[in-house]
Amino acid sequence: MKQFVHKLYSRGELARDELVYLLEHMDAETRAELFRFTHRRRMEKYGDKVYMRGLIEFSSFCRRDCLYCGLRAGNRNAERYRLKPEQILDCCREGYDLGFRTFVLQSGEDAWYTADILTELVLNIKSNFPDTALTLSIGERDEITYSKLYKAGANRFLLRHETASRRLYQSLHPNMSFDNRRNCLKTLQAIGYQVGAGFMVGLPGQTAEDLADDFIYLKTLNPDMIGIGPFIPHDQTPLAGARAGSLEDTLVMVALARLLVPDALIPATTALGTLNSEGREMALKVGANVVMPNLSPVSVRNKYALYNGKICTGDESAQCRHCLELRIGVAGFSVDMGRGDSIKAIMANR
Ligand code: 5AD
Ligand code: FES
Image 1 (cartoon, protein in one colour):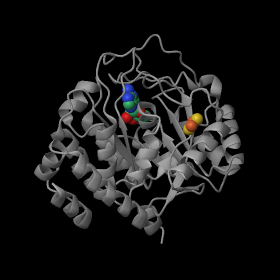
Image 2 (image 1 turned 30 degrees about the vertical axis):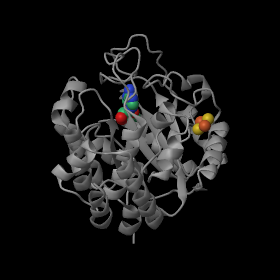
Image 3 (image 1 turned 180 degrees about the vertical axis):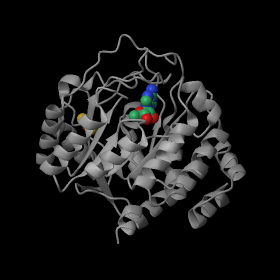
C-alpha cells in the first residue's frame, strides 16, 4: 500500500486500477503516510500560505433540480432571495475594506441575472476594485455569455463537475447533461478563465471506481482549482434520508488531489467545516490551501442552504474573516489576502 503512496508522490499519477485498489484498502497507516506526503507537496508548491476568498452568495433561486441540493427548484419550502447588483457591490466594498482581493460571486442558476445584468455587474466591480480577482460560480450558461463576462473582467469560474461517473451524474441531475457540463468546463478554459472543477464525496451510490474516475478526469482537465467536499443531506430533498460522506474519505480525496494535480488551489470547504468543527483545519494539513469566508449579508445567510447545518450563517463578514485567520494560525499556516493565482495561471502570464 505504501508503495502506491510513494509512487503517487514521485510521479504524480497512478493507474486507474491502482487508484481503485488504494481507495478500497485505505487503512490508518497508509492514510498517515499519504498525509505526510501531501503536506510535503503542498509546502513545496505553495508554502504555508492559505489564500482567502470572500464568498458572496447572491441568489438562492435555481432552475435546476439536483437531488442533493437544498436550493433545487423542487424545494417549495426554500425561502428564496436575490441580492440586487448594488447590494452585491456593497458586499464587495465591505470585503475590500476587510482586506479581501478576491471575490467569489455564487448563485443558483437564476435567469433574473441575464447576461447583460451580469456583464454590467462585473464591469462595475472591476472598475471599483481594479486590484481584485473576480470569480463567478453561477452554473451553466452559453459560450457567448461566458465570453462576455470574461471580456468584462471576470477572471475565474467555478463549476464543479460534481461526479465523473456518467451513471451517477445522470441519476442525480434530472434534465441535465453530463456532456454539457464537461463542455462548459472546456469552453471556460478555452476562453481564458482560471477554472475550478470538483466533486462531492460519499454521494449515495458512489463507488471507488467513480472516485478514481474523478481523479482521472481532473488530471486531464488540469483545472486551476479543485473543490472537494462531503455530501451532506438536506431535509427538503429526495436524499434527505441518505448518509453523509465521511470526514476521513473527504480528507483522503483532498490529499489525493494535491498529489495528482499538485499545482491546483484546493479549498478547505465549508461542507467539511460543517461535518466536523475542525474539518477545515484538517484539510489544510493534508494539502488544502484556500478558505472562502462568507461575505453575504447575515439577513440572507441561512437561506443559502445547500445542506443541513451549514456553518457561519449567523456570523458577520468580519467575524468569519477573523475566525478563519485564527484557525489558520492555530493550524500552523499563514494567511495570504492577495489574489492568490494558481501556479498554472502564474506560469501562463509570464
Ligand atoms: N452536500 C454537499 N455539497 C453540496 N453541494 C450542493 N448540495 C450539496 C450537499 N447537499 C455542492 C455542489 C455544488 C456546490 C456549490 O455545493 O458540489 O457545486
Ligand atoms: Fe465563519 Fe468561522 S469561518 S465563523
